[in-house]
Image 1: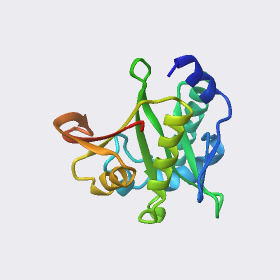
Image 2 (image 1 turned 60 degrees about the vertical axis):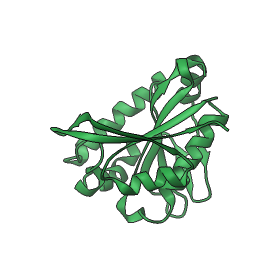
Image 3 (image 1 turned 90 degrees about the vertical axis):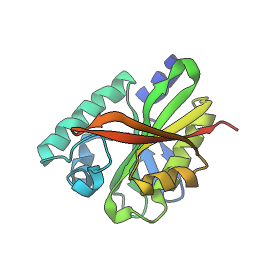
Amino acid sequence: MKKEIVIHIFSKTAQLSSPRLLFRKMNRKDAQDMFDYAKRAEVTKYLLWHEHKDLAYTKRYLAYVETCYRAGSFFDFALVDKASGKMIGTCGFTRLDYANDAAEIGYVLHPDYWNKGLATEAVQTIMEYGFKTLGLHRIEARYMKDNTASRRVMEKCGMQPEGIHHHLMLIKGCYEDIGIYAKIKE
């Protein structure tokens, strides 16, 4: 995987599709939809970031994301429900390791869309994109030990457990045990 190719792909308009989802760049027009899920403590409980306190914060964040897309340094997609046209979450790569053709995938979904298989559909789509288009050899995902829903998504996507790292990360003032799952290109 060459950094120049990845930067070129993500600095342009990249769109993907799955049966129920459209994957596209986030933009400021998504502010209300994003704020609707990002303001919820149950959504951010197992994430690295705190809930958004107001719509203005979400707008500033999305303006920042737009500049990162232009620079080719942001690798996350808005998840849009095809049926409603609403942005319902994000899925993409949180970290790219160019030297080793590897990446870490991350995802978040509005709670109204939990338990419908959409997170699994999103992760499978992004993994396929990573292996086929970006030329990745390895994709991993991390989860906080108590986040069984996220762990199940990883398992449904064919990822294999690699263990729990005790107190690996300081998140919101607490040291958390982090589990890692990974899949190697077939």
